[in-house]
Amino acid sequence: MDTQEKKLRLDLAAAYRLAAMFGWEDTLYTHFSVRLPGKGEPRFLINPFGLMFDEITASNLIVVDVRGKIISGDAKYNPAGFTIHSAVHTARDDAHCVIHTHTLAGMAVAACESGLLNVNQISAEFYEQLGYHDYEGVAFNLEERSRIQASLDDNMALILKNHGLLSVGETVADAFQIMFYLNKACEIQLATAQMSGVSAIEVIPDKLAQYVSGQFKKVAYERQIVWDAWLRKLDRIDPSYKD
Image 1: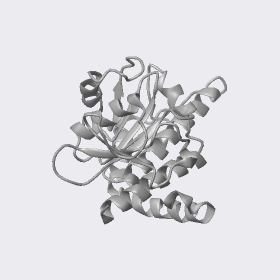
Image 2 (image 1 turned 135 degrees about the vertical axis):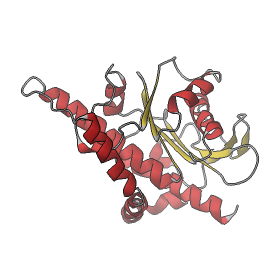
Image 3 (image 1 turned 90 degrees about the vertical axis):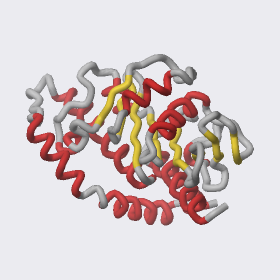
């Protein structure tokens, strides 16, 4: 195992542990992946099916290719997870990391016809950078991959309608930070909807949301700074993800 793979294993395992801390788990049924370096068909790390997020370590992640063959690891993967992640890794060379969640807030917004609204500075970050994918049932059908690719296009995140959220990034730090704030934007929208009977909801105008989105792009480098801080926090609490 080379140095790059070791680093990616540590980062991805840390992402699972942090997600467990944040309450993003849906028992065994969501998944994060990261593409391994190298030429040829993409290979990616993903969680072995059967483990909770707080059981994931750098060493028990498995390696899968885009044809579904397990290259390394003594475990199976979630078939729906393979469909979703292989779709993105096949289509987007820049989407090295893919994070998919079924959080309460994310699924609530995914069930809304209006999708994510510009009701807060955080949601404005995703203005014109968020795709939507129509629900087709549990993602067991590999033919859905082409439609997932079209829905994601060149966006940094995707709302899977009636399903959940997905984010992509060049690094684990990027994808995780994007998911953190996409989920928070959904939490804010859910809370705002509960206030709608008391006060009218004020939506950020499109032109201003576009401006704010551009501001966030200029400080995207800060995602790594935040990630390093999260890793320090995780190391203080439970460094066993490194095993």
